[in-house]
Length: 383
Image (cartoon, rainbow, N blue to C red; front, top):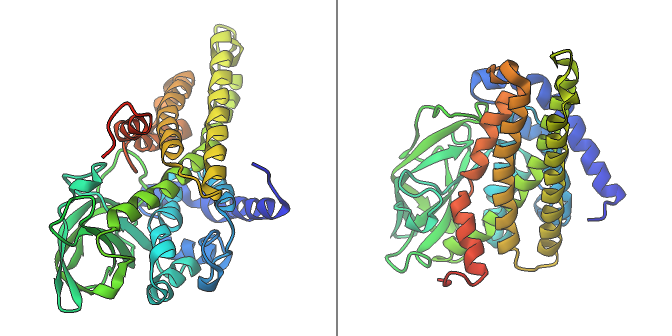
């Protein structure tokens, strides 16, 4: 990946934003169980950071995805992953399909405020009985005149309490499960939409996460993104940006944990010498830094191919798998070197330990990623 002055400009803007507008407040937001998405997103929108690779005619910067990766990397410096996850939902999880396949009218109505930061978006795919198994969702959207009537529920939905709009995956016919789904934009204030109390999670405490219920929710059919029945395909395409964002956003977060562990083990002594002076410790940290660099190389390679229009299903699945597993391995190893302080709730390594655990679950579990990779390798038959 070759970085230009324009890349570095975006990196600088994003880094300053993290340092000045996010990190000073994350401890309070973690305690509150929510961060001020509308306020934060508006500031990001004013800087042009919510539509980096979105079309200029809708307020985006019209740049290729490498510029979004630079932004994602800097979001990895946020000291609470609940905030960076909420931002990633807005930029790379709930709006890519809208930007690629939405009608002009739909983009003007919904994508424009998403990019400007005047609206908060949420992606509503997972359900209580269908997390990574997207094809098995039960939510239905039946035609009624020019409208859809939606019934069902969605689970573990990020940004849901503050969302102005949901990008909802629903069954719009009785056809085969990979061809009967559509993505539909549903305003959160529509009659029949309700949101549960915030869900209590292991990590990402600053991310507002809840269950959404749809009870005879009526929305115009024109709110459908693209063609009817292609929602599963659109969502799989949308997942590619989600997984690339997640991997890129993990890089500097992982490096930060390693660096903090180095600093802590320099100061903490046992048996008359700093813990860092033990070969088993500094060798392990060197090994973990090497793993981060390997993840970075694979992520950059996948992004380059994505920009070139190549199918990155396999590599995006690989970076998602590797990122999630490395997060578990890295935070566990570093926490061990912190000893009793690592076990304290308020320590940064403990927060990272909690937050990174979602990496092997959300956006497609490790097992789903392995299944995709196996199919692409020809080990398993493709559907």
